[in-house]
Length: 116
Length: 110
Image (cartoon, rainbow over all chains, first blue to last red; front, side, top):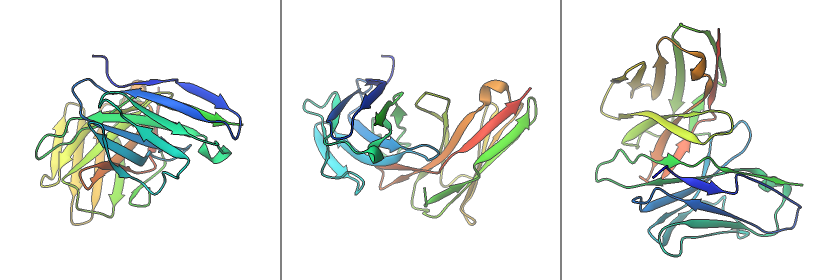
């Protein structure tokens, strides 16, 4: 396994269009996370899944955003009616929670979204 | 990043030591982490420290934790040009989502 992969790596879209990103986690990892990173900032948590269940969503995740992990493996993040403020790097991470930690999260290379 | 504060820039010469500092507000996390991000790449976990420890050494990396002052630092010995990157300190909120500082951009001059 080569790690967490994300597709596409870059996406340019016009305002108002819908976009979908995909994340493939490390195969034995049952937790999957989505983060958003804007220029000059650290990543901000959006949501996470344990297997196929979405267990937590940040207040940053507006109703235009939806994430799924239908079979507990890969995940998709969809943004509807994109706005220029959605322009950011969208990062996916995965982990396998061991009792007591250290709860290491392994990140993919990210999908850079530009909304024009 | 309001839960974690980091200085934004650090410049050192090749071969010198680099010290990157981080101040955090929430001390509930069992572990504190350091991540490295190179241009165009995702975040790479460098090291972590258990909150009950004061220090952890891992090859060229030394992590110091002062729980009283809520201060975390990362020392890189013999800094190389390949160490040029953005370094993020992070802590885990509710054992789920990782909270990150804004990152320190380290520039290593030859």
